[in-house]
Length: 199
Image (cartoon, helix red, strand yellow):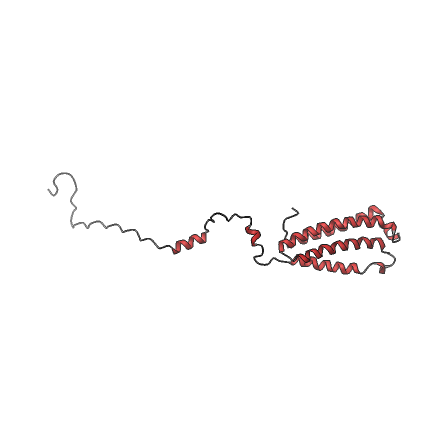
């Protein structure tokens, strides 16, 4: 299940599902640790360490899950490895920055939010879109497709091979025509029987 190739549509819906699940998990981390009121009214610093740690662990788990589906999609599309690894590394960096943002953000001062997080998010979206729209090069997966078959023995001829062989083979002579029966003399035919004939 976690090693099979996935196409564009499945990759899109898997990514969407993981994004929604991660958002719900982060909300649950906030609710379980200090609550939304505590997050808004608390000062940045040590009071949010529990929240930041929980958010970091949850985000890294989803980084692994996103990396898995990105690897499966990239393998299916025969995509460049550097795009895949850049997507995984940037996702991990984004997880650390996201946890750090929860630790240091001051909701009374909107300028306290780091602007680099948005830039990294745009880069991640570009890499994700590249992996999504990648398509395999023609004939690149022929070795993978033929490796499951055993071609050591004789390969049975296909219908096209049999048709070509039949067309190239010399045609046999037509069967000899049956001799036509001897013509009957005019008049009543003489009955055949034992004894003297013609009496």
